[in-house]
Image 1 (cartoon, helix red, strand yellow):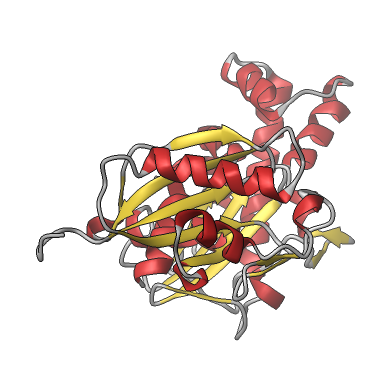
Image 2 (cartoon, one colour):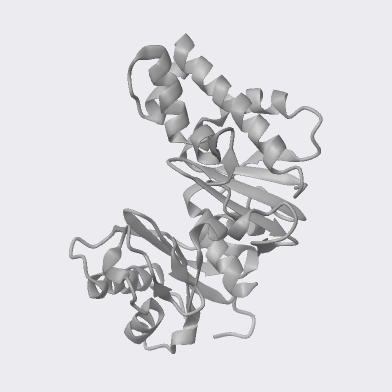
Length: 292
């Protein structure tokens, strides 16, 4: 490799239904072509590792001197040792040392395969190369079926400290007689729409009806925005972020709820921004973690 070549690493985003992989270059955390595949039909650790390996080979085709691999994985997972403790999904990985298995397939030492939490990866992607680049204090929420969250200070993920919930996870923090996820997730939108129309619709469908001018759908998103604004104001007062980044599936409909949220947030000192990297944020974030 030439002395002035841009160092690079294989990065992965392991989701509930599919896996993505790309090469991430240190300069600007630029991603190469993204390769994607579904989780293996054969539910074994060997099949899972084979999908990782084949995706990595495809993503890294023609790229020399890849330093190793960084994988964004859901939990519970021992990120330091590379061992999965998931039972609710990908149970076939339970107790498996994914680091050793994947390193063996590439002919690397286990230390060349590293892991980080998927929500932390999303946050780092936006901090390193997206909507929060250069920002000192950042909170990132991924709004979807659940509520993923991450807190960062000076470009590094923090999981404790003033205003940071345990592990940086805000979804299950007690809130208004329930938990945060009850108020700002897919089910909150669906519940509000069903109360008005007696129908259960996907969020994308509700957004379609709101865009078309249906009053009930419009009201649902405006209510969601107000609830989100109140929640951000209350939950983040002690952490005092400079920027809050909103990502996830619901954020694709930000034009329908963000004005209501911002009206509720009038006077707060932080700025709300929509994630810029979308589905590629965890891949870029894995690169940030490796080179950082």
